[in-house]
Image 1 (cartoon, one colour):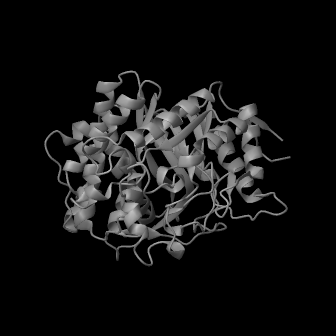
Image 2 (cartoon, rainbow, N blue to C red):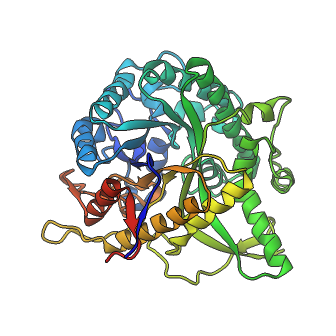
Length: 449
């Protein structure tokens, strides 16, 4: 066994999202989100389930924070429900909604846990969607205004902010493939939505700088470690196309490179040209303090000139997990090395990384050994990337609790804490003990012996 110690001051946390855990969907003045609407459309979500109750975190947050403290978490990444704070997306804030996050932040700080607040984790107010959603340029400024409401309320205690969670998923799965809210399948909508999401990020960064100059702000992206199927020229070109569409399209503008030409040309060819106005790219490239990395697996790609983007995913060669992707724990370290080299070694927070493992409760215990084995592999690879010079400062496991897993409903479990959806009882899994040991030692053993 080798005990791999992380740098002094490395931070360990867990992440959740508002719609996935809060519940209380129609309480205390909360407005509707696109997910409230999407879940009520037949056939969109497994078993017709929704986040109406979820983990009932809205009422149980004090007990959940006590559980975080028991596990030894040093930081906690939460998201704010935009329609809970601004029921119609704009206008006067809902004080009861703001008060919930005010109390939650105080509870975290009282427990010695640093909050990291994400402004947007996919729950756009339905009222804004009715006006065009992210395809409407006005939504970008309304997002920055919403951020200002939060900076003013929480910024005296919250010093770490994430603007968007996984813009790729918002655009590709919500506006191109239609499998997540708002359920649109139209590149003519997706192109403008992509640009306005990125523009909203830049405007929110500027608003935070104006309101709280000492705070740190970043964005977190959905990432996959891409690999070519072989070293032929066409395969390597396909690899770069996959990176253009799924990685660089969302990273390059943040770092002042604009959008990849391949991406701009594709959207234009589909009738969804990005509506870039003078000065937009400068706004999007407003300096950030960190890059958030969400990663769960790798993807092999191969050339395919028969499809409009020029590549497709290759069949898996590793065991496939229930979520449909490969068990590839080395992917985290591989991607961190790539993104560090690609963007001149930014400060990185691993804002999501985890494992879907549906091991049932037996005699009151959950022995989720698959999750433990893969988390150990992810952390071992991450440690190696740090030793290679990557500037990684924090790790947030996904997720603290089993929760509503979007279109999968309650059929997939990512938590290190089990949620009984009938009783809402929380039970730490064996992986929670594993993670607590990692935090306590600031280290991971690489073979589990």
